[in-house]
Image 1 (cartoon, rainbow over the protein chains, first blue to last red):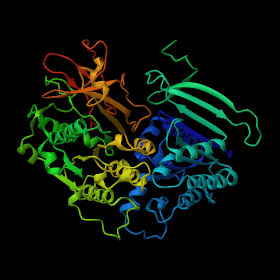
Image 2 (image 1 turned 90 degrees about the vertical axis):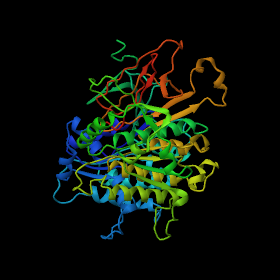
Image 3 (image 1 turned 135 degrees about the vertical axis):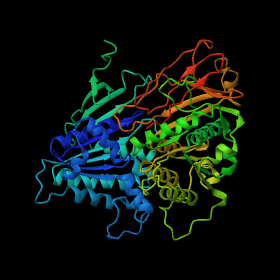
Image 4 (image 1 turned 135 degrees about the horizontal axis):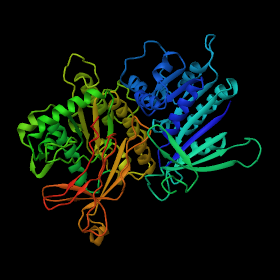
Length: 248
Length: 336
């Protein structure tokens, strides 16, 4: 509880981890606020169904608050002036404000407990954070947003945050590198997914490095574990390096 | 990603549109340099005309099944292959003869929309558009109004026949679109292009459309932009032609005109994606045909990569070499 998990992918697509955490927390009975910034609702729904969870049902019973970023952006860009007087969570795209406060307010109102709900925990899930930079947010605004979310979700509400970022080591995107490095320093758990250095392989899709921070304050060594994985239609199998089923 | 002189990328761009004509899709052509009407006139002629009606039925039923399939395909290689025997069940795409132009009758059979930047009125100042470059903003508005008015997003349910909109955007990001990312290392506004792509992605996701964009990425010095652009796309393919490069004389490449790099493939509606076995693809333009083949050694052996796709989510390289013409490739990303 109160943990910040960073999902990071390099040279491959780490979104399978997002699908996993989404269905995991929903099955565990937590209330989830999902900022789905890069894909449509139906994409996540179809995959979640394969993993045994219905996002539509979760939305209906109030367990899942889903921000469909693409749709929200369209409403902002092509929609009429907002009638309700409430700014869009993605208001920063229009350039009228430069920070992500509206997005933070959205997260806060979604996860603040009301009298009627009895969910076992609160979770904020973001897919993905790097796209905010592409939409014009400055790195410092992105980091401020995450900071405020941590205050509310992790410290106040004792919930968890899981965020996906893209981060190649040889990337030339300095802004993104800044965000990723900063987040790495403040995460309790980092799941770093990388494509194999030797190139694509049918049986091993990539390698995952699990870095557990024992304590953010002290200088104790992090615990690092490395596995390789293969993604299947409904499942992902993990195995020790070099021990893929294809090899044995 | 365009090749250096845009020769081959333009060809693939036309293939994408030509396939749309033959399938009876609507087209939307946007460009800042060649007038869309000219582009349309230069589409290659299909080889077998009587495939068209069957294909239209097949596509119509498929689009019924899937409400939300849309993609941004950059450089999507859509050189389709055809089974000459009518008994095969998998049928995607058609063959084209690049030495001939498509007949005007065939062009008239479809509806097409165009956006030619030099002809467009400048954006009214009160229309906010997220501080985006006005050419891009205007294009987005145009696309959005076509999608809405023609009902590609389901907004006119009384239209019985659902159709697909194929959008082609030529040389996005170039100087002609009033964007300086191709001409300087520190452009004035690095976010216009990525914002444009994000909004476009939203439009495509909520309508029955697919889009191909060609970009002169070799001119973009700020590599961060291309990384972001890649992350915002479903498919990214780069063409590297051998014209004027030292590879032209390399024996390994003597049969080919260039290399095809697959940078990204879509992973939609599923945990997994279909990835082909090989990433070494080369292309060549013969008099009548453009083919993409797996680069292999020694050159006179041929391999076949067969791909059966239940997912239809990735492109593949299929090499058939035979005397009567090698064919290639692409998996039709519109097979919903």
